Amino acid sequence: MNLLVVGDVVGRAGRGALRDILPRLAAERRVDFVVANCENAAGGFGITQEIVREILALGVDAITMGNHMWAKRDVLGIADTEPRLIRPANYPGGAPGVGSGVFAVVAHRSGPQDASVGVINLCGRTFMQPLDCPFRIGDEEVAALRRVTPIIVVDFHAEATSEKQAMGRHLDGRVSIVAGTHTHVQTADETILPGGTAYITDCGMTGATDAIIGMKAEPVLRRFLTAIPVKFEPARGKSRLYGILVDVEPVNGRAQTIERISVPLSSGE
Image (tube, rainbow, N blue to C red; front, top):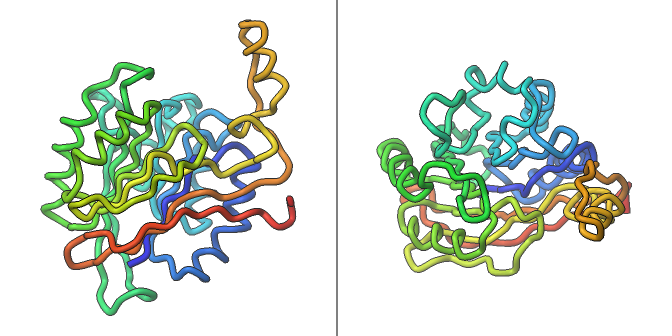
């Protein structure tokens, strides 16, 4: 079973790259299930109800989020009614929405049998908002999902490489994939851990590449040079889709291969 995890979709450019690249990529690489991090999809910060529907219509099976989950208050109108929109599970109790989900997959490409895929979203705490412990919450979520399926994808939205690597080792052998997101720069450390879990520190970013992590360069530079807060805006222009493609054994959920994905938007290059 081929699972595609798409790195942070940033702004209009990211949504355009997803729209133009994903259908072709999914067909060419025989993708059975798509997870996309979309916490920056609306103007670079957060997501809206309209954009949730837009992205799901493109063939994304589950949308994961991160520390900008509530940046657009409009999302509150869909968080409790759209199970394919998954916010970090380690938000405090009482937060709208769900931190995980199990989704049926019709095995029309990679295998003879249908299967289910579990998806969990977690946020790191190092250099980020102090949420509930992602390791302990992750344990609880994994235990619940493994009663239903051995195929589990974890999007760990975190800043620190060490925290991401620690999560990979912590969940090794219990989930199929631990995919880091948040830093927007794809790392070159993709690996299959000893227990059979596919791991990468960061999937990268889907959006404008002539930019600074998807944002227009000039305001970002001005902030670094002056230390004065400025408004960041998503960049436009040539774009890429970044992510990982993982081949998972459906019976036991163990990852067989992991491959970094980097596909340019032809019309923007």
